[in-house]
Image (cartoon, rainbow, N blue to C red; front, side, top):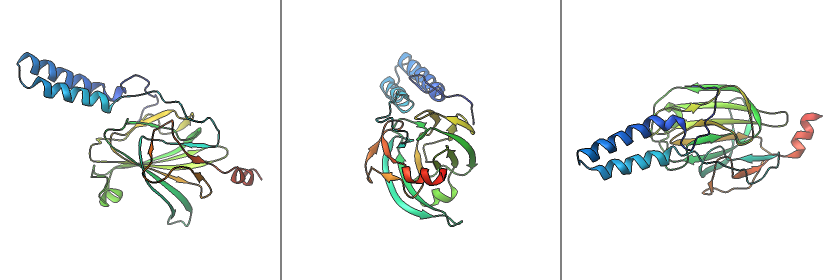
Length: 220
């Protein structure tokens, strides 16, 4: 599902129906005295999963690259695509217990979004990269570009995107992912400041910096 708005409430509106459902189940179980504490625990669990905290970038450097998702750095490596283009890949593992909102890593415009429908598999399974549900998002600005691949895991029922094309501000919420991985394909000269295993927070943690030299080259 693609929307043209974002969500700024304390609980992401995509989770309201689940919060309401488990609140109702708790009230019914409490009334009939049937395992009310179990349903109360599930209610708070859903609230926790769909929490929507405010985030302030740790730096306002226009060349900074922010984390697009909460989670841990899973991989940092160089890759070559089939068309011969070389990128620096940075992959973030986002679990069900991390905040679910996706945020823009740079001030940019979404120039293209491609959805590839598939299964909701265990994200650790190699088959998930070929058969799993994913979205490929191209972010571009005057000076830099980022290719973002959002992969849905077993606990995700969809990849929510609030817009498929159009401008994004620095750290702006643009989607929601319950469980999965987010890959960033970056220019090869990006200076990475994080390491594998580091915990990052979407819209707050700086992953690295774009090179000023590459921008000069583009302008020339």
